[in-house]
Each structure stands twice: as C-alpha cells, then as structure tokens.
Image 1 (cartoon, rainbow over the protein chains, first blue to last red):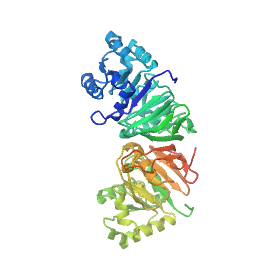
Image 2: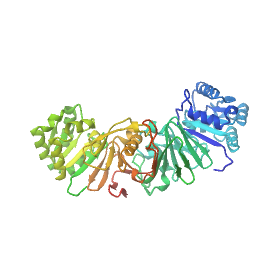
Image 3: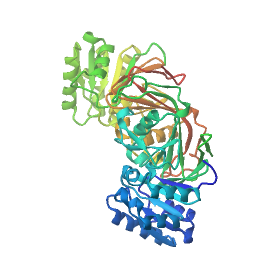
Image 4: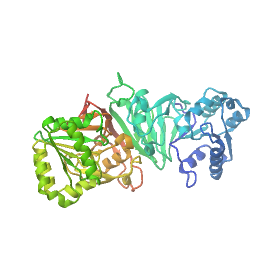
Length: 265
Length: 265
C-alpha cells in the first residue's frame, strides 16, 4: 500500500442513514465535503432504484455537490460510456449492500473496474457497506452461515475486487455472530488478517493505517501469531483447531497498523 | 484445584441424547459406567418432569446402575432428606439446562449445596449442560443478549456455584454468536479465562487440565495477555476496547492447562 493511493471506507453494514450519519458523514467529508462528486454503485443489490435513491437522498442531505447512481445489472453495463464518465468525474465511489458476488460478476475485469481502480490510485475515496465491504480484499468471503462452528464448510471464498490485499473482511460481525466463519476464512487464506466489522461501524484505511469510526467495534483476528492448526487432514464438517490467535476489539477512534499488526492506543 | 477433587463435565447445551451420545456417554463412564449412580438436578428447568424423564431415559439406556431425579422447585426443597440421601449416594450429579439463576436461587448455600460440594471433593463427577454449565464458576453469566457488541450492557453477572474458580463459561457459543458477551464478561471479571463451549461439546476438567469432547469446539479467550482496555470511564452502551487478547479454538481431543493457560497439542 503506497501513499499515492486514495482512501477506503469499509462499513460493516446497516450504517445510520436517518440520524447523525456518523459513518457516511465521514465518507462525504473525505470525498471532498461540499465539493464531493459521489458515484453510488448499486451492482450488489437486486433493488437498484430503491437503494440508489436512498443513498442519493442521504448524500445530498449531507451536502455533496453531486450524486449519481451507476447501475450495473449485467456485465455489459460495465462498458457503458455514461458509467465510465461518472466514475472519471467522481471523488467518492460508494458500493451499496446486496450480494458481493454480483459486484465481482458484473464489474471485475471490465473497463468500469479499471477506471474505478485508476480513480483510487489518483486519490478518490472508495466506500462500501456490507457486500460493498466484503468485496474490498483480493480474496473475499462469498457466503457461509452466520453463528456456525469454525469448520471448512462454514465459509466459501472467491476473488474480491482487490482494493485492500492481505486481509479478509466480514461484516455485520457482532450482530450476526460471525467469529466462526471469519476464523474459517483465515485458516483457508493463511497469513491474512481478519477484520470483523460491526454494523454502523467503519474502518477508514489510509496507507498502512486504519481508524475506526461509528457505533460498534472492529474485531481484528490476527492469525499470523498462530502456533498450530489442524487443517492437514481435516474434513469439511469437522471443527477447526487454532492455537495462539491474537484478538483486538477496537471501537470508535482507535487506530491499527496493517503492516506491523499493532493497535495504536 | 487439587487432585483430591472429582471431575467436572461442562457441556455447551443441546448435547446428543438420541444417537451416539458422545458427551453423555463420557459423563456416565466417568461416573462409574455400569456402576454409576446418577442424580439428575432439575432446579434450572420449569419442566422438571419432562426434562428429568428425558435424562433418566438416556442415562438408563447407557447402562447406569441407578438414576434419580432431584427436583428443587423452591429453596425449601434443598432441605429435603430424600434429596440429600440421593446426593450422598451419587457418583455422578448432573445439572440440566434451563435458567442458571434458578440453580443458584434454589440450591446455593443450602444443605443440598453443601453435600454436592462434599461429594465433589470426595471424587464424584459433577456434570452440567447449558444453564448447568454456566453455573460452574464462582462468577457466572446470568444473562445478556447473544450476537451483541462487546459492551457492559451485553452481559449481567452474578455468583455461580463455585465448582471451577477463575473462569467464565458461556454456552451455545458458536451457535448463538456469543463472543461479544463473553468478552464483556471478561472485562468485568479481569484475570479470568473465558470458555465458550459449543453445543453438543463438553470440557472434562480434571485437576488443572481439561479435555474437549464432542461435535463442536471450545473457544478459549485469554484476557490475561491483554495490554489495554478502555473500561475506565466507559459508559454502559459503549463498545469495549481490548488489545492483545489470546484466542484458542480447540475441538474434540485437544487439551488445555488451566494453570499455565497453554493448549496441549
């Protein structure tokens, strides 16, 4: 991660859109505040009109200069000139919730994907909530039951959009009891850092550091310290063993260094 | 914990009672196998007849020599001569699920409590599932929402039955997503070890060591390594911060030393 990149705002879902909007307020501020040009990416959702309108409403209420929905309902939509122009113009690109596989299926590897990554390299803010958070890493959690034992069949993984390599994100973390599935993802993707982001909570990633914003907390599961697992010979429905994993719970205001794996108190 | 004591079988709830009964089988074996005299303590449940009959059925099926229900529906019941005699005679004392507060309210500090602890000191096996697991420590989790942020209001604590000091037990752990509530309990009871026991899974405690038995896993949250928390000045609904907690996930067959806090692989 170099300093030339933009900022990521990775939200654990169900962020406040009616009240103080602590998390979205930060996204708009980082995207330029009253001068922000925001593109709302609705690829993840099956209800792009309703979801898109909801975000137009809140971003306009917070004072963004322009808000535009970029709707990808099929992969072909990611070739459209008007979509590419909206992204080129955007200072903030926001991915809504829904199904993270739709983001990858409809956008990854298309010209739209390329221009989004270019804008990110140039300093634009990339935000995403729920499915829009899950898709941030190189390898993402595609699905899997909440509140499950940590076992291989608790999670399915697939390529993500690659904004933040070396981590796995799970969202709605405390609210859906997803420790088991995040641990399973980490065992399948060793040397990764797991970030379980609660609802109405975000991490703001800048270079090698992130800061926590919002109502809940971020649970950091650092598997790099693990001294043992039982993956060798493990069958799909058997419980994973994992020794000496490190855990941090960081609420609003706390920071964490992604390179050193150290919280900054 | 000295070697003169008996054995504890602490079950995370919903243990198999129809099929192989891996967990209950172990309880009966430890209690003397075909020579076991088992007392089923139904204090926790509002349905003592149904729950009691269910355990009579399974313990008899597994071949225990005698099974008797000790039913405490009020505190006065813990003075009854027949109950005291049943315990004096028992090689295995099994606490059913229900509400852990009922166990403490109806039994703690009574003659029945005293004779149960005496039998434990003499080598009897004390088993408990769900509420019967929660009550094992000195300080127990009385209640609190599952799948919640780790905050002070996520959990309420109270005195337990004191069979295993220095720990906090939470049950139905993965199945109800209770990491947040267990972390909150640990912050309220510092220097404790948190044991999150999954359903159909047990720890068998003997002296300073326990072994895991069953379908799921035991999540060990070791807060003694923590370098920071934000408890000072924290309000009730605010998210806890906690840095450098150690986590182990131990499935069937793994052992753990309660004194050294080390898993035995």
